[in-house]
Amino acid sequence: MGIFDDVTGITRPGQANGAGGITALMLEEFAGLVQGTLERKSVLAPRIPIKTVRGTNTITNFGVGKSTLQALVPGQTPNGTPTKFGKASMTIDTTIIARAALPVLETFQTSYDARSEIAKEHAKELAKQYDQTFFIQAIKAGDLTANRFGLTAAGHTGGSQVTLAGANDYLDPAMLYQGLVDLITQMRLKDVDPVTDGVIIGVGHQEFATLSMAELLVNSEYKTADGTSIPQMLLKAHGVAVVPSNNFPGGQNITGNILSNAGNGNAYDGDFTKHLAVAWAPEALLAGETIALTPEVFWDKLSKSWFIDAYRAFGVAPSVAAFAGTLKKP
Image (cartoon, rainbow, N blue to C red):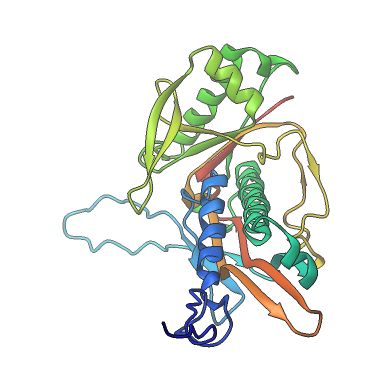
């Protein structure tokens, strides 16, 4: 019987090409875990398109004013009519990160996969922050009384706003439903088709329960771009998805948001204490990211610790306000 070589005879599945660090190939599982968990925990990530922003920190959406019709008179050459343009911009100026550090001794002594559990927690917090950010800016788009392009007299409008008559009307399912229908109707009058334009209604869980208990919602499915089916509920008789979330900021006065700073005028702060719902289509927002969600795990020789990171840099701002609207308490 030969002597077993306990050095060359051992397979280290975590090594890359049989050399180097023994955990080199474990990073991909960590990366997939963060991305997968975030997609499951976020109610908006599968629904909202976001542009890649490189080579600049600002992206711009241009607005085009309406055209003017005129009667063609035989024998006369029609005059041209001017078309106005405007723009709305969004700047990405903050990178957010979730980081954990595991000292070498505790890493060896832990009986469970701490890095995997930390990765899940990173993803949860990033998903919460992501959803709240989009809800905030959707509300701000819906609250605009004029469009961001400066084209009010040229075909563009502000958002739609509906305010319930009584302070407790939102507790009555019929009145809450009527408020949402009024909001959708206002948007329709601005040439927004809530179904074909992909409008969704964001609410808190209390409002969602009020509607569902009164059978004002119906079951459906939403298919993402990659073909994934997501169960959802639609507003009865109108076919608009109603998305409940603990990250809907209604009832809160938000200050000191992680993305707010003096440079963007604290754009992610706001008083949302009276907001009950927000309806918006993707066109209502201008969203971009410079650094996509990036998970990492690495060994630091200086501190003798494992670091578990997940970071990203993105931003969002109101764009075409007509595609958004809000329902509020008086």
